[in-house]
Image (cartoon, rainbow, N blue to C red; front, top):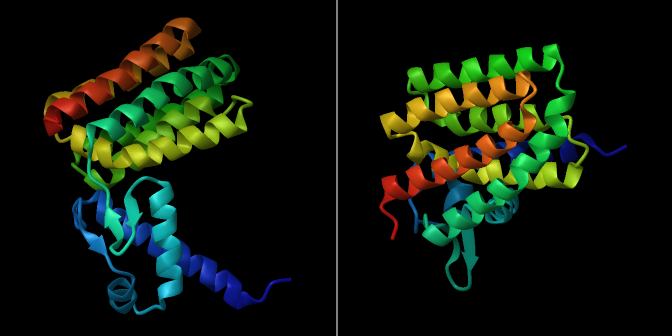
Length: 220
């Protein structure tokens, strides 16, 4: 049995990871900002080891780049990355939905509807730091019966990366309204057994989010 300090270390690393992640997603650490391990360690009152672990995880999520001589730098919002993330989502998420949706029970739909209502409340109340998490939870709730653990893991990671983009995209009031109505329509398509249409609609929904984001950022 591992000693308690190991558990404390893992808990500390997770807390630091979330704190730095939210700093990037909220814009507190802007694109191009250098995240110096020693400065972060001093700021949080910890050693550099858990900071380094958190930065490596953030690099895996695409939120930072670890560069020679400069260390960790907050990633830019680039058109190439937007296309990469969202094209992967367009390929993978309908596949998960088609495998999961026929197995969704009435109880599942109650949970999915509740998550959608949480998402709508967050948008209506302008709770920006909840947008990405609630969006990801809603999507993954629709996919959880798919027996594709590797694909689920990849999509969960893509949705986490999309958190940063979701906050920006939903700064547009028209995009907010469309996101809420499209989620509701997607749920209804699944509930009514129109699974093939739901898969196509999901791909269209993710593509529309990408287009909204590109227009909002004016990324050429």
